[in-house]
Length: 187
Length: 187
DNA sequence: ACGATGTTTCAGAATCTTCTGAAATCAGGA
DNA sequence: TCCTGATTTCAGAAGATTCTGAAACATCGT
Image 1 (cartoon, protein in one colour):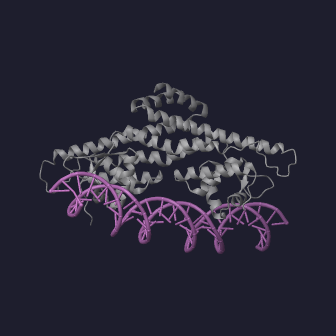
Image 2 (spheres, rainbow over the protein chains, first blue to last red):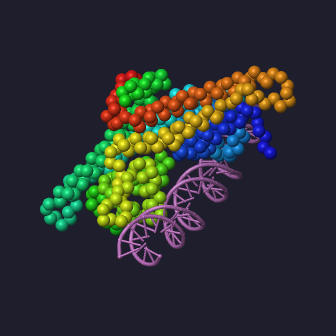
Image 3 (cartoon, rainbow over the protein chains, first blue to last red):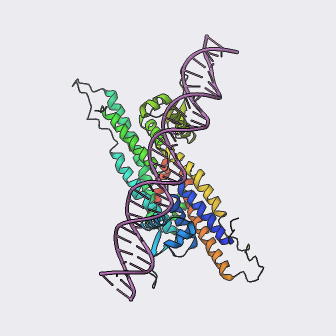
């Protein structure tokens, strides 16, 4: 028989569970998502020990996870006067939250992807033809051209996503909402 | 000494590797991403056996993976007359590709998330107070209100993402590119 | 300098995900 | 109907990721 807790506690638990499930779909470790959810929904600064106790995770996990969340700008370190240990507080402005996430993924995934796509082109001049026989086959050249076009097209799409990410990162919430309205009108 | 292969083959291999790495970051199984990359970059229909041979994966993997890619609309089944076995061909229009991916994630992650966030609200009326003592504490009510505001704010952000996804899914490539220009101007 | 308190690290354990391969299933063709 | 070749399924193996816990490391106050 596990204690039901207050309605608020239960609502928090539901949210933490939901957020960790979402995180899983996004490749974010369960504990990381749980810790962020907890800090966000509680809304006030907690110590590492509080987090450990609340979620039942190990000290190591809590430490690693908090460090990462701080690194990602989703959580801020807070010092309390008269307290020696550190406290952690989740960013409460959901627009900043979105921006932090978008900026992170753009920087870590999109930008390098565009870079790497360059290296996936096939070089038409570097024909193999080890025998030295002429006519390196027009069809091979055509294949390489088609290949490069595909890479190019992909790069454009990724570039577009990058641009959207850039705008999200740049503006504030109000601007973004407005932009979406425009987007709707353009369709 | 492994054979170097033609420049085209090598460029393809680079792309397949890149795409599978990207997939990993997005929570897509390595094999799935590899198969899609292969079909996309080769540009023509292949049989399951071709895929197996080309990537060195098991029959089971190839089957499961192709089924999934077809389900996601990233790959189409192709029947050739006089051939009994099926062939598979990747969608070559990169805009359709983007739309398929966005539609998938919107349907499977964003929409349910919005739904689930509703259930994370705390009900102010359902105060615990098992002793029946009056004054269910104004501070508890305030906490619940704050909780609900946080949930609400999150819902708005997720709703915005949903809206963007909806527009991407709806329009064509040209429209989208235009919209991003507008977005840039609005910032 | 030392002890007390709080934090980080990391090797191995636990867990979860993905892949394999062979057997079951299915779909024509004779 | 039976045979043949293609496809699907799924239990267990292989592999990758994440978590734990205890030891090492800081930092501060005395």
